[in-house]
Amino acid sequence: EGHVELGSNNFIGPYCRISGPIEIGNNNYFDSFVSIGSPPQDDMFTLKNHLSFLAGKNIFTNEDSLIRIGSGNFFREFVTVHKPIMSLTAIGDECYFMTQAHIPHDALIHNRVKVANSTQLGGFAVVQSDSYLGLGSTVLQFSVIGGMTMIGMNSSVSRHVFPGSLVAGSPAKTIGPNFTKLNRYFGNSRWWQALRDGETDTEIPEEFNTLLTEFHDLKKVNNERKIDFESKRNLFRHS
Image (cartoon, rainbow, N blue to C red; front, side, top):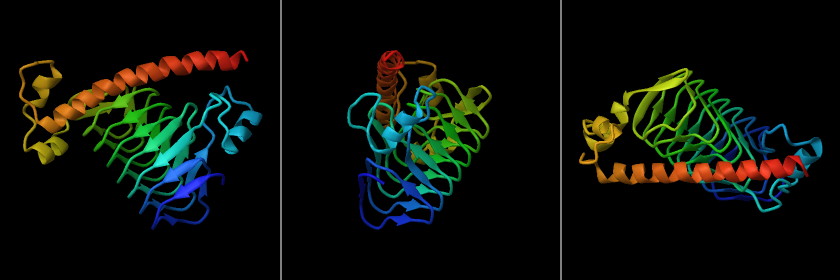
């Protein structure tokens, strides 16, 4: 429905729904009953508002909004990806979304992220590259999940998660480093705890340092997005 740009070699299974405006790259797999582009979930929106979103009109900002999906992603049965309230819901490359995973409005999912069955993210959540969200986990809105992180199954994440962490529980707590991922990428993870404790003279891999800088920048950006959203929401509710 609407304006949908499709790259090459995409597989779209039976009973899928893709509602634009949306840009989709190449070599993506959409299993049966996948829903991409439904209106954002927020109780401030009326039936008329929902129909406007379906028609590709963002009545919240009156600006262009978009879902952008990269290449090489897998969307298994009943995965949902919602239109943004503000401007963009984005998924990078080579991600894997298992059955009934939910990607909400304005979420930013980077590359090679794996989201297990029935995992739910809140609006404006950000997940950096190479992270894994375990079975049935939940992530609070506006949270930033650092790269190379492992979220244990049935965990409830209510705050930002430092890159390279292994977290679990409800509420989720940091158990330690994500040994499997860090050792695979960097050969060891001995430096992680010192870095997590704020020791500034710790020698860390350059790639991880780049990831960490991006993580801190994303926290600032999400704070700004939160302030902007709440301001516009108050205006919208009283309009």
